[in-house]
Image (cartoon, rainbow, N blue to C red; front, side, top):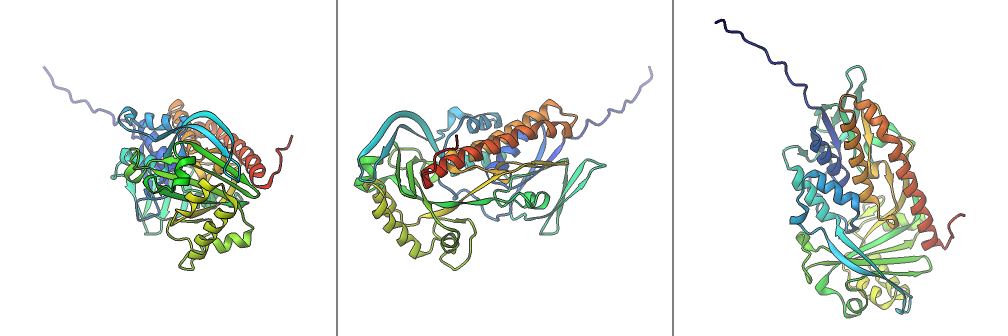
Length: 393
């Protein structure tokens, strides 16, 4: 009986994605593409973990779905803090309206650490600053060049590198965010440090108050180490205030004299602006909100900007999350849009696994439409709340 040797053909190699940006958008994309059989590497420009940034997020269905599809056991973790009522206060502290509207508030940190843990460390690379992208259309490959002299080749490059995206600037330099004319002061106060006036009127509800050129809201979110136990949470507030470009530039100069552009992280706001926020709170806010703002030792700030890209695909490069569209926070959609972009991308690539270009062509139109719809919604809401302009009929 003769013996025969057979050569087994190599299975086709798994497609590889290079994800630029290791924040929420990059982690949604990285985890979801891995779930459909892709090899994924994430490249984050910061040398440090990002889990101390940001504040509260209203938990939306697309975020929950992205976590579920990533393989996270949602029954084993608590995703946030529930609230039952939405309460609107007049400037004098009396209640204008109170309605039953149950929802869950989570935190940037909880979503980030959950996604980061699911992705793991082996393919998450820090201190990787993208300098240039090169595409080889004949080979259907894209190369990312980094400031440390290294380069990486993949079948797809995903720009998930935020509102100041390097990927977007390289491919679509004309797509630039614009300042909306106001900023958000933000703060987090440990629940057990809430002043009595704030605890009595705000604790456990989703609160709002308006005044001329002023709109504030607040709610409880997970505390340090994502702790959701009563007494261990944070009260998160966001206060929108009109500011002209000159005033914004002064606010965005941090306590070390460094110009920060569009956001000041916690602990870096110049001391005279901390004092300014506390003084304005006493003048403009109902007693509960005034008390919580004054109890915030380190407020932080972000400029409100608008962006809705007309293009999100160029060859084998795509942008998603805030790199492609920046929804105003009134829409409560920044994180959910990043999740939605990534869910749809995974679905499109699964639908035509042998034709990445067709998948990207199918994916792009809906994402552009979503970004533009959120810009319309956010602009109308912000213009009404901050500038008393009624929506265009």
